[in-house]
Image 1: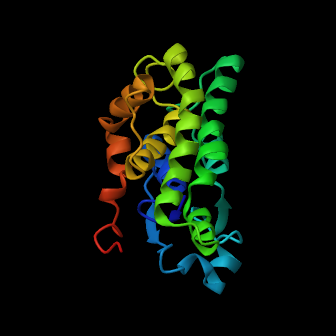
Image 2: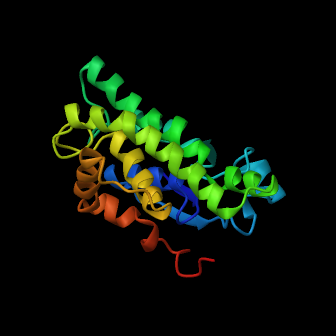
Length: 215
């Protein structure tokens, strides 16, 4: 099986997929898409990779998958070991809820295109920062008690799951936006544990081939 990931080094959605691929032990080719230069809007990329003008796009033997959560679920279905979801249905639902809280409720409100839209409306840098901080803090305030109850080193249990694939990149983003994590010790602890895992370390933005030439 041939895998090619179209990614941007510090974008959190492809960061999730890199973690998932690494956890599954799947090698892949990396094709950078510079979001700041607008390469996601190139006609060929939109037509053949991602019609939403976003990353990631994962090519699988000539076919293309988009949306990070869908890609991670596909990885789980096609390569079930090691698992990203627990066996019990209720536990699986909790992990999916944690992942969705990050991917659907926090991240979309502070990603690049929203930042650019706010700037286009005349919102200054300080107000844009406050906007991003607000939604990260609100989301983490809901996620913290979930991790505190269900975590045992990682976000859910003692092994990485789909929740950690989403949480680690969002914590990276929280640092970028200067969010104080001291009110969220369970989240911070899970992120620290994840950072020490080889699959997460290899997926870190600073270790991506396009990081060296980043704007």
